Amino acid sequence: MNLSSEIARTAFQARISGVGSYLPTITLTNSDLERMVDTSNEWILERTGIQKRHVCPSSETTSDLALRAAQAALSKAQLSPQDLDAIIVATVTPDQPLPSTACFLQAKLGCRQIMAFDVVAACSGFLYSMNIAHDFIRAGTYRHILVVGAETLTRMVNYQDRQSCILFGDGAGAVVISKTQSSESSSCIMSSQSVSSGAFTDILQVSAGASRFPVTIERLEARQNLIEMQGREVFKSAVQFLRDTCLEALNKAGLTVEDVDWFLIHQANLRIIEAVAKQLKIPIEKIPSNIREVGNTSSASIPILMSEKIEDGTLQRGQVILMAAFGAGLTSAATILRY
Image (cartoon, rainbow, N blue to C red; front, side):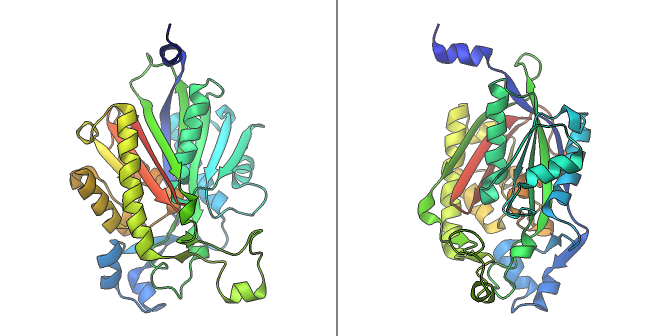
């Protein structure tokens, strides 16, 4: 028997058994930003499609947001923290440099001793993590894996930079990936694609705060511990990477754009989403969006959007969904699943 067909026949399937999200109650509107930086509500809306973003209170951390999203996802999956075999947290705003935010989340959930680690892939982090979880499940290593995207990006924003400070918000989204036999359910992850190109590391970065440039008074005064972005280069690269990664994931799954019911594209900038839709000839009505109310929540973006669209009845079991993201690194990822 052909080895690849034997693997396909015997491997387990991975499905999303529960989805949840959490947004802090504090919001920062475009009108608020008008009083902080040289900008306007009209200018921001025209260029990004964003009207407000959520802000984590100073008394809470990234793992606190992750906890609420994780609890919601576990409830939807009808599982307890004790059922989990692993936790993967995607974030660029960890509670601390060491240990991982996943370990803080593990303690707050009250899990038993299981594998817990962070993934740093910026806005693509959630899909990177989901793809890792998918492979663990397919191998039969674990039964239930919690995957969380959680960010407190407003603490890394340079409010003197009118180009980038308007974009980012805080929040968390989570999914439980569970093992199933292909005969048990039509719900499964069909294909995934993750890539990176380190040649573009300088166009979206936080340059100070680690081993390359440790924090000093001079670097803090220069705001090198905050987000730096070359907007035009990011826009151009985002459209290209998202387009190519989506096409590769579709090819791996043997699908076309017409076969997909919904496209959940990272909510970075409405104009990027529109450009990708135009290049791939995706009907804009197939691309749900919450960017107006949430902004760019980096790795939390796709699971928050997914959770909201399940709650309002847009996404339903059996539908084919393509999720795609782009982030600093440069990283890009796409996952196609039958929900």
